Image (cartoon, rainbow, N blue to C red; front, side, top):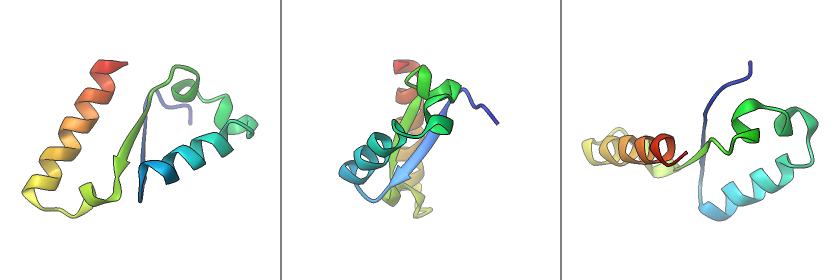
Amino acid sequence: MDPDYILLHADSKAAYDQFTQWGTQQSVWSNLKAVKNGHIIYLNMSVWSGSPRAIELAAKNIVAGVVGN
């Protein structure tokens, strides 16, 4: 698989940053089309609660990530 976008959810922005930093050292991660094009969209774990507000926030984050890239 070589996705155009990756939705990466983590407990915090710091955990997301730590993972993506680690990923830069991994050839498989570094060679993904989404990574090369900067199409990694951070989603906080709280957006997966299933509540209407969380779903709205997740949708806004995904749209902003896609439109911003």
